[in-house]
Image 1 (cartoon, rainbow, N blue to C red):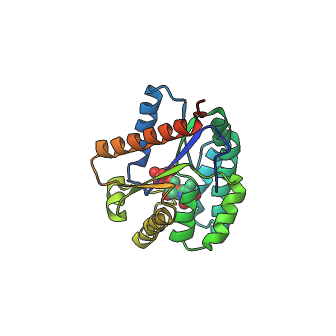
Image 2: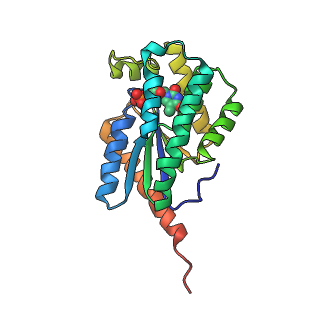
Image 3: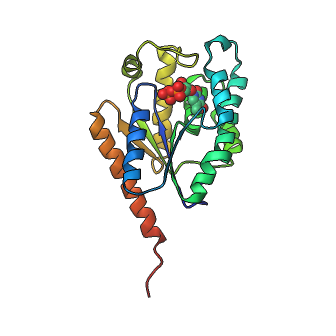
Length: 221
Ligand code: TYD
């Protein structure tokens, strides 16, 4: 699960609808650009033009009869295209890539939430789709589903119309994955003031950039 084969930095943002992850990610991107770093922001599903078509298929409420295997394969097809066409080239250029949802969404939603698939089987499919590319850090904006859904308002697409129990399992799944791999995950309490969350994100990323730099400096002498 190493992603060290590139000079860039791959950061993903996870959490439920209404956690504020998208606006936090955008503000962090602006901040990093202001510091002079090359930054690419993207999202799943829909980070490529092929992916936008896949996204329409996935979210369209008319396709309520989509089978779980077809659904997960569409998320993975979207990701395969995204990795090859956008994410990997940016990382190879040395960009900081900020991605709104990635592989952990599949584990959380299709695995823990829907429970249609064995988690190990899902991981193997994700490895295939991504060519083994995992993020350097994953920020989880954690919030109780009741609160997240309330913030999100009444608008619901095909994927958002699930019962509260489903969303509780998704949250538990995220927390379990974060606890199992603490060196990759950073869990942030999404009920905090927006500025406090943004501040924590900036500090984490700056520390990560410093640590990378320090590791790259050749020894003197
Ligand atoms: P989206 O409209 O992008 O909004 P948000 O990220 O703010 O929730 O919704 C994407 C939906 O797709 C969301 O309900 C989570 C779901 N999803 C999965 O079920 N599996 C996946 O692999 C991904 C990437 C997303």
